[in-house]
Length: 218
Image (cartoon, rainbow, N blue to C red; front, side):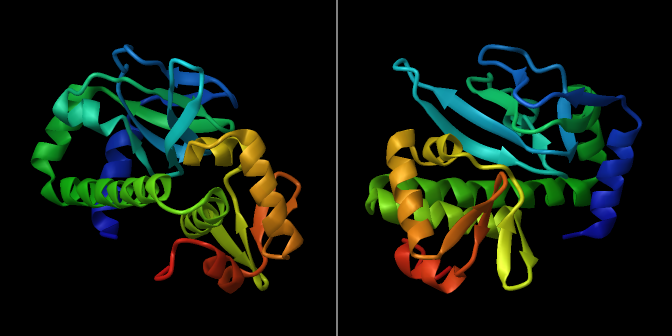
């Protein structure tokens, strides 16, 4: 991470008004023209689609220091997904044209932003593999490892996944039913690999979870 580039990005965004959303509040809907580009300061936001049958598929979960919606800002791509606050959130929102002008004049910040986008792309490619290969049990184990890597904090010998993940959230990340996700999560709990402490998933045996997953090189 280029700390100077990050500082410049934060300084640019900090000149604009801070925006707050409550948990469950939809920030942007399909077909909306976004009011600007967001830099998330606190909380978690999910980007998801809903099928014609009402099934939800979560594509990305954003955390503090993430930006959205970037493809619309840079490429003008129409928005076709929902952006919703998973928790109470706080963010800065910059006008699109001013954001683009900033990137044109600050190549190091543009490089930093591109690097983060590639990290997201890697995550999406992994998820596509999960949807094509493996069974539901392996998929659940794999997505929990990825969430531990991206959102986890070491506490003693365990990894606590800080983003609140219900069984429904895990199902939506994998394109399976909530009932199926619940069955597979219970299997992992019975094996002592994970546990729920309040609203947080805790990875209690990372090596064991790796062995149950599709992530042989995690």
